Length: 385
Image 1 (cartoon, rainbow, N blue to C red):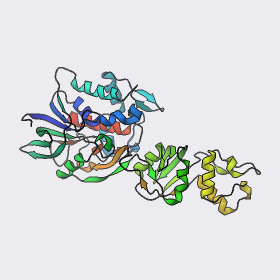
Image 2: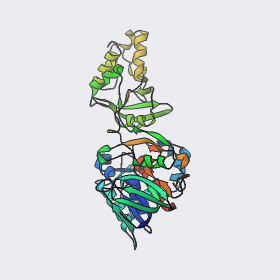
Image 3: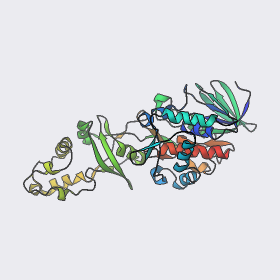
């Protein structure tokens, strides 16, 4: 048990927690982390190289209140993040056209954030690892955090505990429980950036396990353009992961031939339709078999067969569900942004209570957007404190 009263307590030493700590160097800060070391999710993201941010930052890449997101980014955006990292010795590299990664390994980002939080003439940051948080109350103007190590008290509290994805690194719902205990509305958490499972009618896709195709997926008003990967469990790949962010239930629509017209592909009057479609033979064969389309020239098909073939451009179906939290990269849902001030990240219900990162009801697409959100919201909270 600590009798000391800190200026601030940060719950969670992930991306948001470490960034907040790096901006609170003139304060006495206790960072409570249930893992044995910091940045567990950073360490395993992006294939071990961590996709830090994206050159094309926009609220349109997020599920959440656009004006809230824009207000946060107006105070600390991707350019500010890159400048901050350069200042502290990390030079991110651009891959996949617009995505920033660590040069060699994700540990470089973790070390940079720790270094940034310990530099200067004074650093009051104290890390307490292997520390489980049981609950939080506010009494006599102080937050009292009940933990496995005892009670920690502070004037300010930043909840940056992440979401429910990546249970392998100890992800949990403590932050959401704390928010609810202080009267906050919490949007139900669901897996996001995750593969989708299939109905029996789409079982033919499972036979294509390992195959990847560039597609366009329509979900509501959104169109996601990336690769789809067929797996033994269902469908995945960047396009599907992004689609899962916006999908709740009902149908999605897949264009397997983006930027192509079927009639312009089927020019030969004698060749079979299947042989003229510029897609892997495995896919074409499975697609034709699933819809009972004969492998004959296009001009010999009847209208029903031609309509079925046209589904290559608009194959609509309802996924059965998702691969779940164990396979999800992030959690969508979280603390309702209506009850958070976007210019401070402070609770509108409880003075001195702040939120940052994935615990908030803001979720980005793949490509560095979620780490950028974690960093931006953490900086806004820390600067306010």
